[in-house]
Image (tube, rainbow, N blue to C red; front, side, top):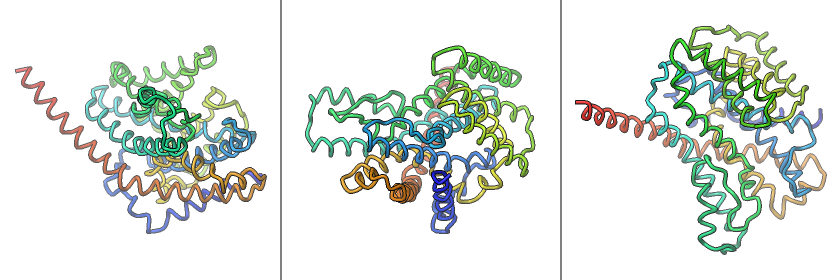
Length: 396
């Protein structure tokens, strides 16, 4: 219990801080909250911070042993995978919902341009920081041939679609970003898969299609050794929930009992301790996700202003968290303190890291992420108009 209390205390402190008026620059008056499930927006910030706490424990063990692996504490060992699983469910819910609402006939140009401008700018900022750390650790010298370094860099420039390797001989380059980039690969694969999936997203078929995919992924998750099916399962949970809503089948779950049930689903997931990205973890989480999508807000927490603000900056929190550990933890002055066995120092460092990370993420959101999202909408709209005119010319 003494290991769990600081997690909730730090989240409470961050929540209290983000209720202050000084963070109003994060607020988005043009937010499409009416078109989305408010509890999902409010949940995202806590998911990103949960991944950060998970990696704080991983990073401490890494400094002590030199091995980046799951921490022995069962709560923090599961915290990261549970949060990322819910992120995948959210993606499935939102984007399958776009297809279901329009019978699979979406504006693909706007969708993919929007994704590029949503994911790309913060990713490139994080990549710039990663390269800066690589060069500092390399003492600003090339330790490999320039053409080899260029080849090593190429996968990193795909905005997360491909997994990057070590650069310039710096071991475990990916850990500079806490190894979080891998999840973007699955996000991109899902966006690509939307094209063929649109064929079965017709108004009468989208629920059946999503349900079949969910059943197949559950079966294959049990039977197959291919990890991909576990991630298909997560996306399909969001898809089925979205299809149910599109069909008007929404359960009223905005009361206290629904929040109790959602909390019980989280506790059950932790108690089962089935391991990351397994069916034993995913199914109880699916119940939690379904309840949140139907109004459960953990006793109103996900609907509060600070939760919505943290949700806005969650992508930057998620992608920039690695610098807390690769720079904030892994330096000459902090390394000895964090590996001394004094838990209090570790929690102070983690709390400071969380507050600084949220502050930086807020600035990045306001100065880079939100403007680029708006730019992506304009660019996508303009390209769609030009594409439509071109099709009209050829069709005449």
